[in-house]
Image (tube, rainbow, N blue to C red; front, side, top):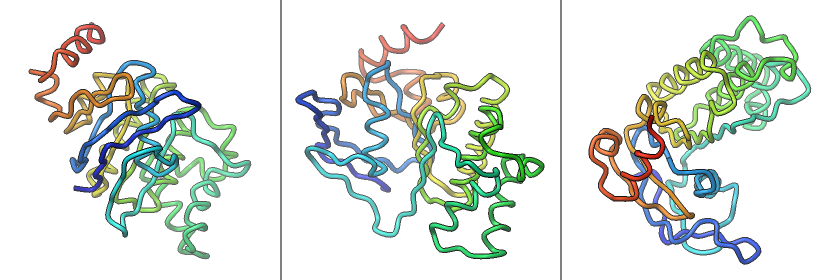
Length: 226
């Protein structure tokens, strides 16, 4: 297993946001589903270490390399290439190797011709692909994705999904939140269903969509699927 959560919780200003989450995550591609306000993004940030839990514990291998891409990625006021290089610079990669790895990552996401363009002038879909390149260049063993296509048009969303599949095929574990059930079907090997800050079900993806284990999951699918 790559991540083990035991009674993990987060309370802010007296409000419980995530409560008593106990689970193990080790599948190649995991999708966290649930209605708005379920606590999906908060749980993802807890897993990645961006938030400190109020209770419980989170364990992962000490040498586990991680990355995270957000729904609206932050772009530095510089070129697409320099944005990808930035993470490598923080890791201590220098000179020609840093530039080469950054360019290779841009090629893998289909944007080598935009390397010299100001990143903040790119379209939303292009910026998300730059963010994926930035994460991929670091060769993470575990990549967290928070609603990676939520604000994109269908064509850009399909391209991002292609890249996610390629990152997974390259060996990275993927844990992602999504509100798109079709996307979860296409990408996930495992589904975690949340509501009210709690995990209601953790199931192999094919079983979740074919025969969910809980009534809460059946209700969720009835409400969300056309």
